[in-house]
Length: 317
Image 1 (cartoon, rainbow, N blue to C red):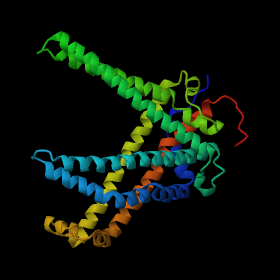
Image 2: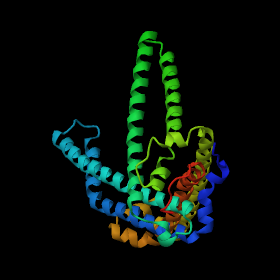
Image 3: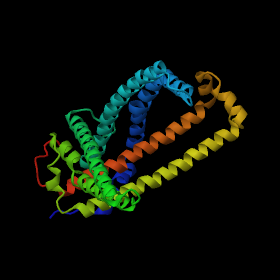
């Protein structure tokens, strides 16, 4: 049986960062262009609609519902729902592109042109795999939650009106089983992305065969990757806190609640003129963190696929 090193797999992303630091800088720029700028554009377009929703909600608080206002809120929310769907599809595609770049950096490190970023059929298959996995996860969680709720309700009825301990215990045990099951399935399907990328075809359940007997090792890699990301997020929070404190200490507009209120009453363009140096600093830090996180999160699975995959046609390499 093929094997792989848990620690080497989990740290594969840091290997990319160490070998190709300029690639990470390129990914940071691409992340801003692909996710942040479209999001800011959409916020600028939909901002007035969101503000109107908040104003209508505030007007309805503590009052009898106004049918016209409620209907207006429903129409505004429907527009936001459509935006959320489009942004979900777009962000999934962007994740597939960066996932493909991380896979390419592991599998073909010599092909570093354009920071390993490509848009082709392999990225499309990755995007499809991600979408299918997300939909399957949603369906699975919904079905399991429904089953747990029904079983807990039956237990509550059987225990009587004042005996809810049994129902809570049933719900807790059912929830724990559901979490374990979801994690197990996710680990067994973890090679679907690398297989789809390497084969340039849609692969999903084929991953079950490749990951057979590897569940504990895959779990070890996943836990280490999560630990690395948590530590990185803590460091990011510290850096952001430092930037905010530096900004608050040097800008009179950010000192005191009265100054803050006066600042945010200004037109948005004036607020940006005051805050742009600090927002830019935060943007650079967050973009670099996001680029490193892409490598840390995606690279291990390409490393594992390379170790586990049986000899296959790899002419694309």
